Image (cartoon, rainbow over all chains, first blue to last red; front, side, top):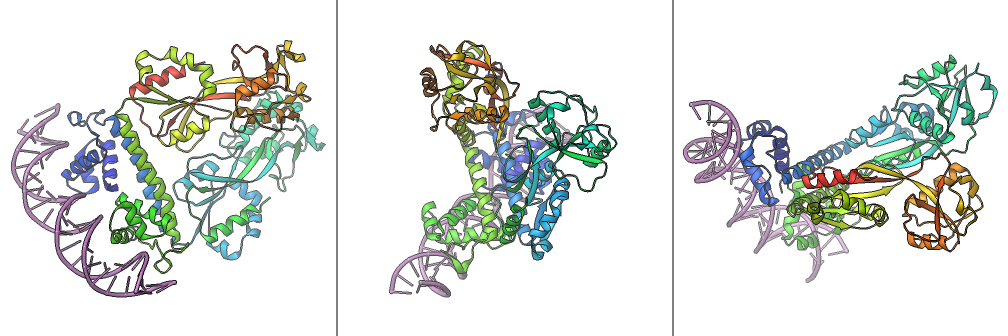
Length: 292
Length: 292
DNA sequence: GTCCGTTACGCCTGGCGTAAATATG
DNA sequence: CATATTTACGCCAGGCGTAACGGAC
């Protein structure tokens, strides 16, 4: 089977117009007709209802099945081109979320040879954004944060470290002098709530469920961690923070959580499934795995 | 690009021998040479190291990348053929695990027209097995049990119901007359442990973690639910069971769990991503969603 | 020398274009 | 009748086979 036929077909289902598709690919219009006929022979089925051309139901059920699969096949072929083309540049395209970068970047530099650091092209962004880029072949390796294990379509992820959460409070807060605190004591506190894109958001919900409390939370959800810190510093409320997520932050205190709850912030290395690592990339990943 | 070339190439990487691949596909041997050359032109890269033919490192890094992707592309093409061929039969290929079937099958029959029931081809098996069959196109719709939401490569799953777990004990057991029990009271009990393939196994671990107990469990892991029941009936220990999982089982009693732990047995409907449901299949799924 | 892969060359199918025919509204 | 798709037919490239050549053990 010719993969061009799949491209023509996907475009035809989208545009529902042979002439437009022919123009799009800069071929004559009968070429499209013939391409569809080839596919219909190949799959021994009718794909387009000739009597209903230009109507919304012109595509048969078999046609829809082929459409859905052909889109994925075409995407995979494009990704393959992208991967192979990029491999020639010998770059290591690496995604690192800012939150994790802040905690770990100095360790990464320590564990990585200068030679490899030169090759590194670092992309930052939220874990969700980086996952998309990884799938699309824009980056090849990413470190991602998550509450649970990462089970994503076409992504191979390995958990390399976990960190417990802590409670952060203003140093003016009554409990600021304690070392640890049980979640149940916090039922009457006001929590600064994170934006949903943060794991902290889901983690806070989990903690509250298991502790059996429903504390007040801010009605707004703060989209940036440094803003959360600022609010806590001003004693507007308390919040969650990954342990050691504070560095030289006067006015804020982090308290361990004493409940035996296994909720932790997980850090994983993620690679596209089926991506074949270069020796340099393997060396780099070995360095990453030494992070603690 | 010709998809036959991808098939030749995948076989070549596996066998590392042009002649064998030619025999496998019943073509002449120069055909394989030319096919590889076509691919090398298409991707503008070298795929096979000519100087190291028949050696383990005969495939270049680009070749390995193409290999990994080509395998997936070929599989997807096969799946597409499989799907389209099967669509002609108008069957509804439906997977249902025995555990869930026992609880819900009568409801499924009630919610499904006789016409649809005739079309139904039911496949039973563990949830893991059914997932594999779903991915391979052996079945098209499955009901699956799980603890968490299902996030699987290429599978679209929708949670339709959850059931709480109960503790099952022999009717001779001291606590058999109670209605409910807190997990913490069970620290000294002996638990019959399930095989890892069961969600019960993971659920038990979660419960114990959150209750902060580490009870005795049987050193063996029982691979069949009815065996677990039999052991409980004989008062050899207690165990977990999905609520209403017992029907006419004399000698066993189910107790609600009073802890506010959100661990539940989830029941999801799963469909291959990109699979285009027939009207009959949609009707059938609508019936499934009415289950409680 | 033997086994395996590549090159050379001829054949035929397959994919595309142009032009004419046909269908749809 | 106008616009859109299919059919007819001719051209050339692409994929395959046979046979000869080249390289590795």
